[in-house]
Image (cartoon, rainbow, N blue to C red; front, side, top):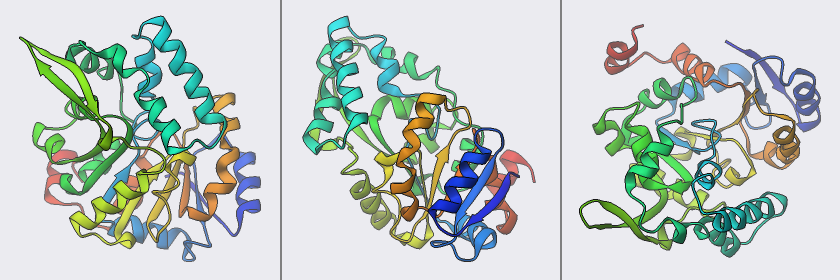
Length: 294
């Protein structure tokens, strides 16, 4: 188990964060949103009935569009790189987010689905992702992503059964496929796009559909683009991997904006501590016992 630090206010959290990062795993508890400290956090993790998680940087340490860019024609890759830098440097409008998301897709028209499947085959999930996922009913898990539905589903099937992957809910851009001896990309459905402005809407629609209250929802993300999923009485945990390099650490200037919406900040490359805290209070299900032992 990592060290747990209960922090009353952002200044205390930030001073402790800067003193410990990246040398040790720590769970920082936001006392304003979790006044009972570690015990309350453990209880909330144990009693969560639904999991809402970002994908890139959270469920795995990769970035789909960055990796995909390596496969694009030079002109499409360069345009997407410029758009990505612009995206991170300022608060974009919804339309700009859509343009960033859709920009490289026409260059993918005619690609076989195997291209995307091969790309995500290299994405290793964070340690603890599978046991945490399996501690929930699969239909009560939402992966909420700026990415593309099909490769996320194919990625899940590498570590889960087909039944689990099919039952899990995925909010992500849907491609349109044509069949001419094999599947090829012929378009996309813009109405399925997830942006920083709609992540919160997708999360709330999912929780309403599965009839789980905000207080019983565990939400995981790794950046300010997840801010609309956080808060609302949910158990909201920001994932800060210790393996972040200096450039990404600078991106954590967003911490002050995120802090009021958070229940806790987990500094670790692994989700194991969330699994351990969830199990410390809650009895394992028969399926968990069969899959992972006691």
